[in-house]
Image 1: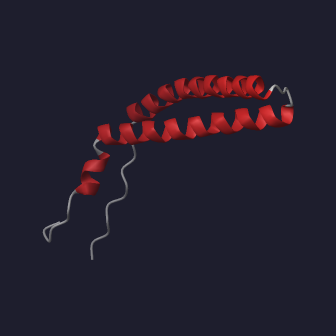
Image 2 (image 1 turned 180 degrees about the vertical axis):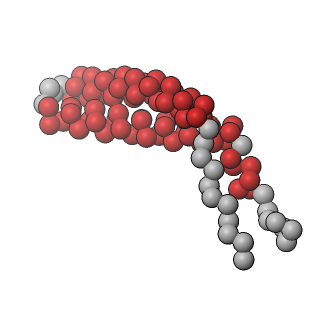
Amino acid sequence: MPRPDPVPSPPQSLVDRFLRIAKWLVLFSAAIAAIAVLFVAYSEGTSDINVLLPTGIGVGFTMLLGTGLMVLTFLSSRSGHDDEAGRKQTKDD
């Protein structure tokens, strides 16, 4: 039985593109977290650090994770790595 081919590594340009986009995602996530903290502080009328700090960390991490995974999905789709996974194998393969 032939051994399967190893998983191809992404080209360096794809990694560079993701890192460039990731810088913007960190800024975007920090801005959304700051808005969430301001909203909670204004609506609750509190400046308690035990409420505002977890809110900022939770919202920031959630935004970063969600947008980061979406960017990885789009970059993976554009690179063509997903084309081979969707193709059915025949007996000739």
